[in-house]
Length: 229
Length: 229
Image (cartoon, rainbow over all chains, first blue to last red):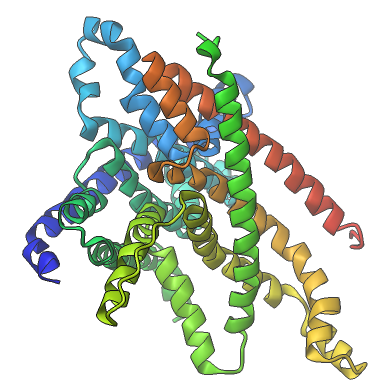
């Protein structure tokens, strides 16, 4: 028990790393997923097919493979990466961790938002068209906001999954909660104490994030409440 | 690049173990899911709270942390407890057994929710009618409820399987020579990590595609008694 108390500052630092990596990946992934999901529903196969291939690959393979492919796999292309001056990025486990988590969550979120876009009632789209909106304006003002509301509960789940999946970055030596727990455990032999504490820490963060996303959901659906009141 | 330098058979052997681990874990997950569901609909509030605790806690902790907790933590915990009673017992867990048990235990929580949803989807009158015909509750469960539930549970169980088979890659961190670990060994020996992790990812992709086909077939089969509108 003393080992845990002694190391609480380290655990809190590690929790910050976990939250940071997850938040950055979720943010960039979200920004990628919205345009990708719009392309994904395009009727032109030339546009929608590459996006489908991307989501299919990243959803069909384990995240661990993707992380290893980027972190260890980039070593095979050291010369080429050096030539374009990107090698220093791929040497950093932190960068590779964020890159793979971002691509992974972008793929899952794209499919979630695609479902949202397809769930937008056609009457609303027709009404927007009748008002003279088309193309970008129609998507920006009507379809995307509605699709995000529809997809939000599923998206919340995806964020929770990513938060837990971020524990894998400890395997490529990033010092997140799992990484720090592993190091403390192997040094002190207090295996179950440290891992149980780490598990508890994740539980707190997971239910914290869940609470935050429920609040955002309430915000997003505020217009529904006003109507019923 | 795709010659695999003689490591092809090793990868295929790894893939076989991956599927084997996946099937064993899934079997445990289904059994635990059914038990969990029965607990959730039980008349006793204590049992219900325990089942809720199981699903909420397990779904909030990363798989990797639980795998490490069981593999490294359980032996030390047993050692510490037995030492307290004056007879220290030293055990070490087999990676296969602890991996399968952990993955099965985690996804048991997910299938509990799947089965609960399926249970709620079966009309109440069905079980009431069976009881009225004089079936005991166990017989009504086996003959009436379970077969009808399965139809609603198959899509959800298919999703659980897809996530589960990818989660088995995590057992590679406790040195079980499944697909991921085999790819790791091959890439270390040949210094071609990208080639081997890419090959491994394509094998995972094949497993996903085949699982998808089986799921579609199973869904069709389960619906063969349903009249379409």
